[in-house]
Length: 449
Ligand SMILES: NC(=O)c1ccc[n+]([C@@H]2O[C@H](COP(=O)([O-])OP(=O)(O)OC[C@H]3O[C@@H](n4cnc5c(N)ncnc54)[C@H](O)[C@@H]3O)[C@@H](O)[C@H]2O)c1
Image (cartoon, rainbow, N blue to C red):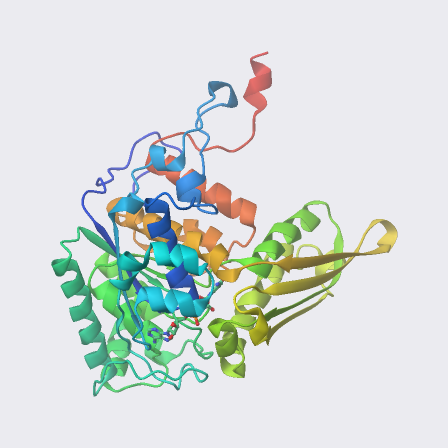
């Protein structure tokens, strides 16, 4: 929520509490490929064994004032962010392996690197999860909590969160869902208000998935929450209202990496030049556990919805019917174990130009999913912590930059264009620090000449 009574172009600074002490990062799905690549990556960076490539908070700069002023500090020098040295990790998984064993199994980072970090990674062990196979059919894991009701399970998570904070003498916490993609669930009556949601927790309502219980526990503890998967999780009215009531920042959904990242880079370019689209066919092969989970049609449906919505919003067919009202958009994900985390993606884009003449673009992206996702987890954790200290709460739309299906306020459409998202993010940082927002108008340079 924007801070009331402050004009968006005012030069008044927002009072941001400094990031003193340790920041705890809670990860549901801590034994997965993304979580372990993130944690091992941060430890590697702390030890000078690697660089935080892909992280805007660590490597990005921000221009301030006019181009002639030549002020472009690093974002982390401009705005008070927690230092990676001060991060402490914990989380939950349905498999009991410690972070070293889980990272080896995920097979993303090389064994040599993991061996150098072995002592520290072995210390991070998951807590038993809140898990139910109804919501992730292709996973079997017994390391989980028992409870009569979903409310009991939520209370156990709250205890875990409070104990972690106390035992590690943490100043603040954030939670980022890095758990598996759950089956497709639509918003329903039980999600409509906090009262019906809490009744649903006590009555074990089937429309309340584990990821919602984690989000509920986080918000109840005043912990900012981001959702890296496409399932609803915190994106239901009951939890959005709870976040507003408790003054907790939230964000989601579905980390924007790989093929969709490319889509949101290319589609705005085509639209900017008024190039028409006939069809966009995206397929990929991937062989990690995420691929195995998405092999179940119910989990795939959640992912498909998230991936498909992107083009519709960027291309705005209602404004450009001649160019974009009649295109085919297909998205396929194929589980192919030999590839592990090293995904290969193909896009065939049928476009048309001047007088309707057809053309094609082919993209073959050999990416590494978790290598692209890990810096996003770091940035989200640091920016959500910043939001908490700056008293921003509810949906943090300025973090849309990181998501395939950005959460947005009621009555607004989501912004998918990566470049608008980046401008929104940087302008939010300028706004927080009382710096002038950058509109790129630039006429005044010429008035002065
Ligand atoms: N890697 C990417 O580029 C990318 C991009 C967008 C979204 N995502 C999403 O991020 C999530 C993590 O991806 P990943 O590649 O690490 O997958 P992964 O399968 O390696 O890890 C997910 C982990 O979550 C655990 N888990 C499942 N349900 C849980 C629960 N209820 N509580 C606690 N732990 C639970 C699993 O046991 C597993 O260890 C997935 O939902 C994926 O769709 C990943």
